[in-house]
Length: 230
Image 1 (cartoon, one colour):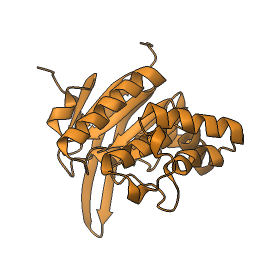
Image 2 (image 1 turned 90 degrees about the horizontal axis):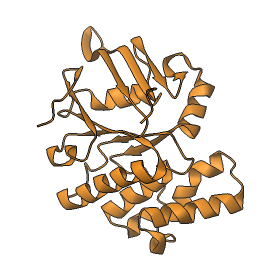
Image 3 (image 1 turned 180 degrees about the horizontal axis):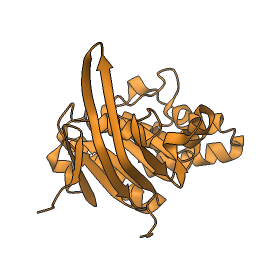
């Protein structure tokens, strides 16, 4: 494992304001994630997990502190550079799958490569490889409504890996799945971290899934600390 961290968060603070009311979502959060790790972020709903992932992935900006991903200071990037980061360096998997309903599984996986203007032959080969990797090569032409929840999440994971990101961010990827399917998805993520050489930061509140992580960051009331494993 590399000694240089892929993700560095230093003193990250995020406050949401609704009129005179303030909600502190993150309180001076600091942590590191090293290449090749699968790090789980554990906490109850509303604890700040999604807010934390959004800061790392450049989907939101903190009020204070800094985040560095793959040597780039995310918190200082322009909007264009953030788009580049999300296209080339970070892949996202969401609880709601986020697939395009009118596109087939293969077409959904290919979307990031179309945006990156990957040559057609290379794109099609990468789509075939990824669908095989997540066990869906026989479902390439099916649309999301023809797939189960677990299959849709597998398509979403394949899509997130399309442009060979260094960091995979997954926000409650098993939240809409039954416990058995959820564990299969987490085991798939674990396997992909090893086979694809990707680093993963996964938010979950499911204690049965935590055992698959290399490390666990516990978040409560916007405060993060590393959990002690039993």
